[in-house]
Length: 365
Image (cartoon, rainbow, N blue to C red; front, side):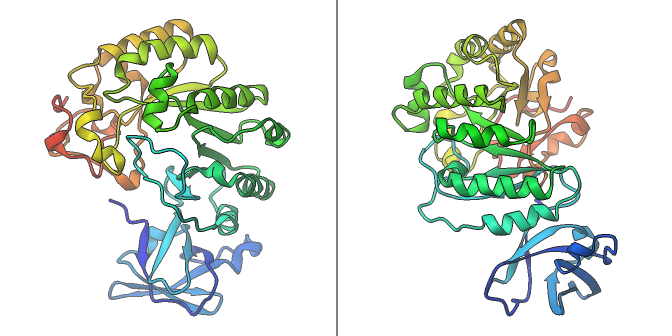
């Protein structure tokens, strides 16, 4: 697993510091020089960088592997956070761990406290690679809606070349948000919003919030009015698998404005691990409800994407919909994958996937 934290010698700071690690100074970007930590030397597993006259010492074997990464150092901490990795397409900022839902398969169970780092995240995205797409996740980012909107406004003003993928439960959009949403550059934000069934009672039970489905539909209607780009997300579980064809019909009939429907496999972590025995739906041995939903969606004009499905768990004709969606830092392959001819095209497995409780139909292709 790719480390997102690197051990460092604590710095004499009392506020968070955001910097970009550079193997050499970028003289063409004078405005960024003061925020660049420039490589000095590597010795015995320690890489030293010069950060505005301070010595930043990292416990890392290959300093060059961090070249261009945007990092954050917090006061008193002995590790830095790799916020944006230059060589990765999977950069996500965790903006809060608070949430107002308790989804049965949640991979990031909510916490009560909130640490506001939006200002530091603005600094980070200003240093991001050209034309990067950056994810914003939680918890529920829209619990801090005004701070989130301010972040987007500042970030897109400074870096209009960037795009953002924001995961939200869709419970906090209000009509008065329309003015701001209309001001966002078209296509600059992809809103990833979950819907688990077309039956309110089923959706509400999964997210453990009464009235969530009704509010979600109202929020989607608002986003449609402002021309937002929407990724509708559905995790396949034991409690909703049978309802997927009906959901496909509902999407085509009531939500034709979404850009695509992402159907996802579960992660075995957080609440997902706690509820795995009850909720994991093994699509490697039972794909009928998914195939019906996908076929219906294709016939009705809904674009489909399959996330987190190893290719060997999909029938041949549905592999065309598979997306390499597992972030590189939490991606792994099994022993069976070693000789598989599809490995290069396959997204693999989550680092915390447990073979003893996973797919029964895993085999090299």
